[in-house]
Image: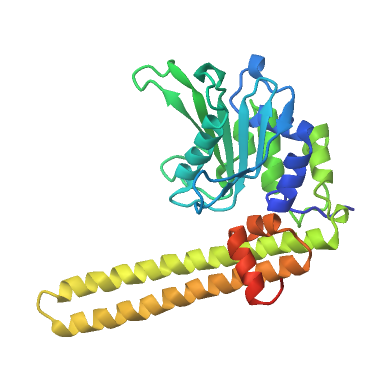
Length: 323
């Protein structure tokens, strides 16, 4: 009986969709809002690292990037966390992919649409129960009027409920695959297994198909996720404490000097705790870098796992006399 690895992990996601174009085509046709006459037939993979125009600016790395026979560009991301700047980063990456289609002197009519698909393992829209969000450039007075160029689909995986999407069967099955397959699954559910592409994707997640080095990278990614969750929870708690302290200080400022002094002390204490949390995060990242380096991973792979720039990784390795 097989033991499956979680397809949401950076390693498995890229193996499935970054190395098997037929699976990526099936996935995109199921998830993207494409009419039958605009379905993807064939794709070509593109480099995923979008190098910055200005030296010193941080690179933006996406999970999978491709274009089809009509030269439409598709950017696919699997994200474990939602951050305040996430949407801006999606627009930034899509914008770079759009403008870099033209060489000097090319006409604007050579530009082709860029589509972004972001699968989120965390909720960001608390105002609605909808998990599927489609954004485009439309006329706000007449939504039938659309400017072609950039489109974005964001999927909140935790909100997804398959029984409510029975009218889009393959969409529901692919999302069930991402949501349900993990280390605790020993056998693929029949309703997933009967579909050839999803069955092939599941076979690519079988633990037996990975080398010890790849399994080390798989675990290192989850170590990073756990560390990041802990730090995020700690930062949220600290933020609440700071808010309470500041509120107390403001109130006491009206007549209690002693309250002001106490508030100052609390802020200093919280500042120290936040600095300690940052130091803990940096130590965890250094550990991931060292372990992945010993496992023989490239700088680019380590950068993807640790979310550090190649320059930062090289600096860490030098400081530990590893290079």
